[in-house]
Image 1: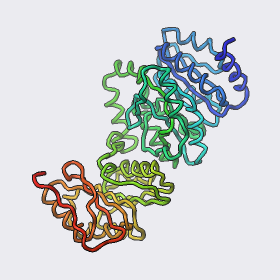
Image 2 (image 1 turned 60 degrees about the vertical axis):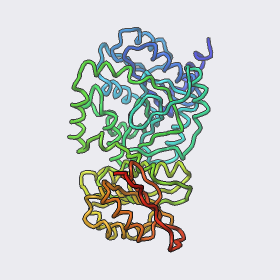
Image 3 (image 1 turned 90 degrees about the vertical axis):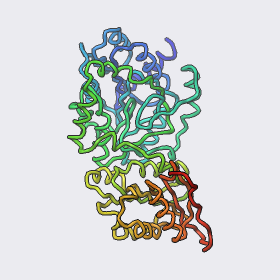
Length: 436
């Protein structure tokens, strides 16, 4: 018996008791990818107490026979494809682990992958879901390792996969090519929402549902797995050209949110700011977003060594409050001009004014209040949609004594700093001529 077969047999013996993790692998044809997936799980997870649950979703290429040859006890096989959501849920129902994973058959796992994901989970009882990064994904989950072969990928991934809490990012939504959940949460939810079957927006839905239960959804950027990329699910798009449009509308009906808009991160805001390591950081957002950008600002601060980062948000809209409450220490609905009333009791390291500056009724009054809410050394970012607003904004902050720090996109994004030790005579940088 070869090494892999011995490891698989040892794992099978452990499946007679309740395992730590239930790993559910779903396959619809593509046996070549499925073999790589299963072999990698046995190779890089044999030291962890897990049970393997395999699901053949109507394959016709020998997948069922391959799954039947494996030593795991729990096998499900359907004569025809019943859809991703329904099929995975059948596996979730028989999962007995403390944690349950869904793994697509076009994923190849790597050294330390599950160790790292479990480290993240065990760090906080309020974490409900964790997803590793990969090399084929949307939702800002993709990284590309410099490799030319699967063997080289595994070597680089082993060096990359070092557990690091500073790289655990809280996210509003994620793609779930490989995701681990608290089993008790999956049992309450019933798994994926089968109204989205065969799939598409089902991953958004489970993320939103878990957060609305009071749990965090985490992207573990310290953990890389290889993803060939939608090899199984592409067939569903081919069969139903309207699937994405229909399920996008269904998501809005269920959650009152445009999932695409809610997930957008404005990296211009992140790039116009400076970062350092502090024990405590306070971030105040003002505007009408779902908080995705300020949440990513929190993640960036953590990656720079900040340990205690708190979010606050003054929303000018009502339809984003449900999501803001899942990520903020405090959030209030009201006009931007009421910021002193709601959030004047503390000072902030970062203030992100997401409201369009040109639409503000009293820019000087609001900017004066916001400047007063900055800690010494604190930064404020705002926008200037045209030369008139730009020069007015620059003049206001100049009179307040702020330092102009950075600009992006021809001064559309501006950042200012409240000096830690004001000199009283510093000259504010002026915008160059000919920008508009």
